[in-house]
Length: 619
Image (cartoon, rainbow, N blue to C red; front, top):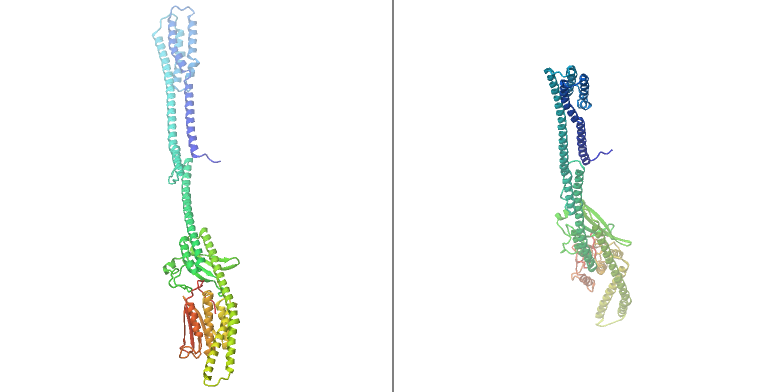
């Protein structure tokens, strides 16, 4: 069974003390009053015994009493003895034999029976009272008087005891009441006042006040509960304030990030440049969300692994960088070492860059392991990945449409060239052949032959270039990218040379626009055609490489080289190569190689604004 609480125990103790004091006071008062009950009657009767003794003495000394006085004295003595042994007197005498009052009463009774009564009964009626009898009577009266005094003293002592008991009870009651008030003040009123103040302060969002109540009673426990509640409320309030502050900051960050994403979305779709459009936006997003670095990987059919196209932090200029005046992604090694990575207590989040049914790439986001990544930041990054997917998909779609449109246009041009210019050239060649069959004699024969030779050479060169153009157009129509077209071109000229033509290709995918790919392919074909037809070469080497920010193309053979004039007579291929190089905004150099043969070198910076990944495809 559960014991009562300390406060209830104290109240019960106080109540019990008051009740017990009252009971003790009433009991002792009742007992004392009971003990002195009849003492007044006993005192009156005892006082009457003195006068009765002198009456008997006067009676026996009185001469006017009849002869029957002996009987009268006996009767009076018997009546007097009855008064001496009256119950009112005996009840006032203690039952304890050794009590002074009982001893005095026994002495008086014995003195009456043994001395005074016999003397009175034996005294002759009417005779003068002897001195001895008078002395005996006075002695008896003095003993009775002493008994009365003792009864009075005993009664007064009992009354004093009753007064003392009343005073003690009153003092004890007052002390209990004072203790009760002090206890109520110290352990009830003050704690309650503290608790009310704490409750008021909590209502005013002041959690600093504490009750600090000592003890184990209910109010102390309630004070401890209030203190704990106040501490927990303060912690909860501060946690809620912190959460509200964090949520506010997160919402502000989200708002800023959404504005940033909106602006970045317009930039991505406006300038069609993922690097210049995404890197500044990603860096601002890193500062807002406290994350980074961020890297973007895209999937390419010419690479077995995803290739990196964008990074926000790099200690060295990326391989795919085409603008060497830009330092957007370059940071110092000290800054890079502080970024969260696997080596620097970081965690990685991978988000797919996808469109329905097509995985385009992956967005890699690093963030501090101790801070984590909030749900809001994750949703923002997911939104960013969706925007990047849309931008990349649209850019690729635009590129494919441009390639398809260009291919269709070149197909139309090829058909028109074949149906018009090719037939016209064929007709002119036939006319030159007819002129050769004419017999022209005289001094103009040599001049006519020279003119015919020049016409034949020009027509053959124009016809060959037309065939190269037609072949290039048809080749590009059937191939999706530059590397595939180059490989087919290498296979074609390897067959024409009779030996394999070597190819080194490390141009990143989608480096060039469709127009730049066409010009690059035609320059390579023109260089191969010259090497196969004019150089008498046994080995030909083609190199197409990317040395950021330039694309370098080399066609080198081990043939007889260029004549001293620098260009063969009646040969317009090098002029066409130079025109195409100027179209690309680059430079071309045609010169003899130190080890023999000719080297055609083309250098230009791509002007297209497309995705350029870091890794290259195989040759």
